[in-house]
Amino acid sequence: MTRKIPRACGNPKCGVSTGIHRGLTFGSGDLDVHGFWENPCRLCARAYEKDHPGKKAWPYRKEDLQDSNPITMKDVEGQMGRLATEIHGEMGNTRNALSPREKKIFDGIKQKQEQHTNEKEE
Image (cartoon, rainbow, N blue to C red; front, side, top):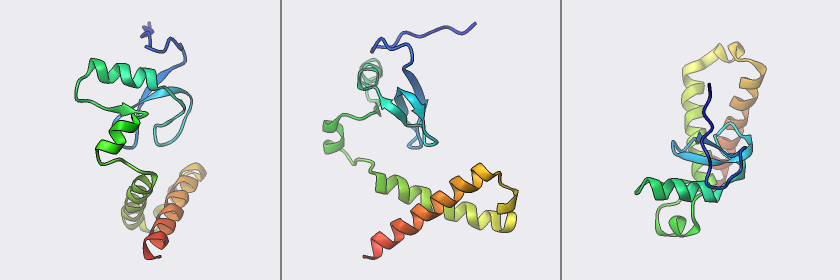
């Protein structure tokens, strides 16, 4: 039997996941492949931080982003690009073994890496 954990926001559809940044994310709606929610829940993120001093949860508070070294989309895309390069190097010609969905994700990451590299050069 699954036990429902009440959320600070009161939304029964509010969930928690682990994002690509290896931290917790709170929200509802669709969950993307990176672990981020379509509808972020700030109430649950703040409640988690209150219950777990020293831990941060997404969506982040603006104050936290200004006071620390924020993770930007460029950072995430850069990390994804580095991972894609590493994976691509390891995979060599085995790309054909991927499912169509995996190929689409892989190609999207590769494209983001190329965009990120081009932006750096400009």
